Amino acid sequence: MPTISKIEKNSSYLKVIWNDGEESKFNYMWLRDNCPSAHDKDSRHRMFNILEVSQDINPKNYNINKEGKLEIEWSEGDHISYFDQKWLRDNCYTIKNNKKYVSPYQLWDCSLEKDLQSIKIDHDEIISSDEGLIKWLKLLHYKGIAIVKNAPTEKKSAFPVLNRISHTRETFFKTPFEVINIPKPNNSAYTAHALRNHMDLPWFELPPGYQFLHCLVNDSEGGNSSAIDGFAVAEYLRKNEKEIFETLTSIPLKFRDKDYTQESHRSFHAPAISLTKDKDFHDIRFSVATMDALDCHPDVMDKVYKAHHRFGNLLHDKKFQINFRLEPGDIFSFNNRRILHGRTEFDPNSGHRHLQGYYMDRDEIIGRLNYLKK
Ligand code: OGA
Ligand code: ZN
Image (tube, rainbow, N blue to C red; front, side, top):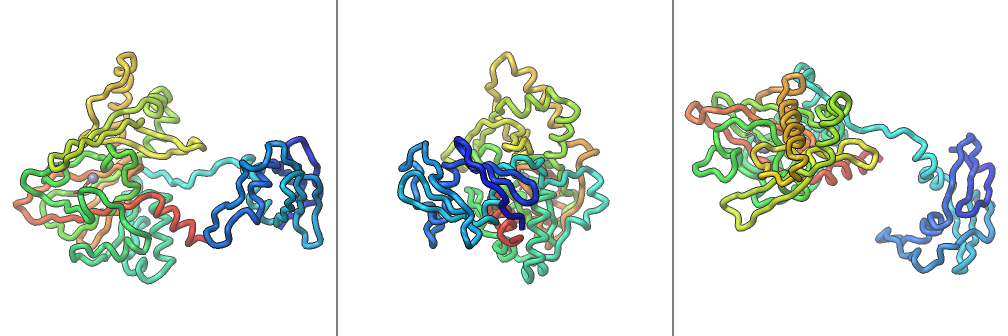
């Protein structure tokens, strides 16, 4: 653990030099705001209010005390702060900003089909061990896809394994939703038709982060599954087709739902690809079935349609897509805002087919993984 070897006072920050040669700048307002006494012990919420000190607050005195803490006596508020050196180092925003961002995502293409074993995990392993649960969560977060094997095949029986992560996300489709061929379907998933690669519910402000399709029966001819890594396709465009990438990340499309069972018309504008603060991929919005009549400016409509057309074709390209067949007891689990999924047409007269679907927010997956890794 590096320790502080030198401190210099500047106009708005303390410059700290560590014994391993690293340098940190700690802004005065930042230090005062993060005084260890600022937070309530139980709620862990900040009780101290930075708005009650002036913007000129600065250290009147500072030193490394006998316990090895950085002790700061403030110019106002009659307050002394004691900072752990390890905490300062771990939370140093200077060092964090000097490091190159490393994406957690492991992008994949059609070659994953030969290695499907690598994304499979046994149901009972998740139920009975945290190692199993962590393995599932890592697949979901890093690869965006996993297939849970040997789950029970009773209705609603995916709840116990899903609840190892957290609660599910409710929608008007109910939990679980029944993916079954029904008369007068309110969604094309509830037919025997093929479903092109798509995400679910892109017309929500926040579409479900993850989706879990639990296969109970799959005895019909057809009804094979497909999946494609939308982030891998987006990365291909970022590298090779810059103008298309720029259009897809900057111009909002429009999605809408006009479900006849609903007394509601839900719709939302968002670009096809959105990025994080580190310019990593945040999410993909793509669904031929529920894209609305676009209302972009006439000067850009042509390039928007051409970019959408190119992206959509790549999202069905055999270089990127994997194909597989779900077996009873499989739970096809994936990041709904990264992985596009589809199925081939099936013949309902040849046998029965029944999946039950569940959604979960992405916060639940990442939050649980962060917690269990510690
Ligand atoms: C869905 C869906 C796939 C399938 O219900 O959203 O895409 O294999 N189903 O039926
Ligand atoms: Zn779907």
